[in-house]
Image (cartoon, rainbow, N blue to C red; front, side, top):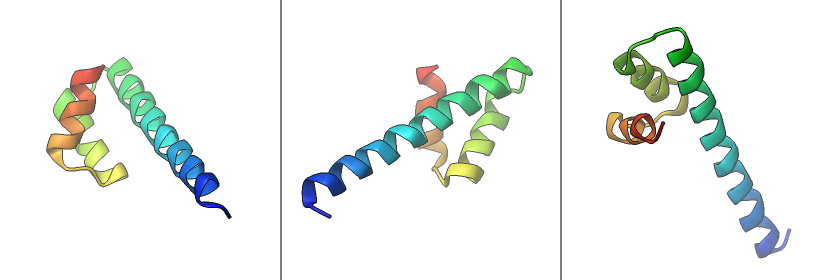
Length: 60
């Protein structure tokens, strides 16, 4: 695989992960799940730190 193809593949993975995070946040919020619990799920499922998860929460 060329270096360019590898970079494009990695970029696509990162975008997919971000989309999954945003979808999870929206889904949990639709059930009135508190943000602290949503952060806990992001930490557990995506191996984020609490600070990283909080950034995603503030984006939505």
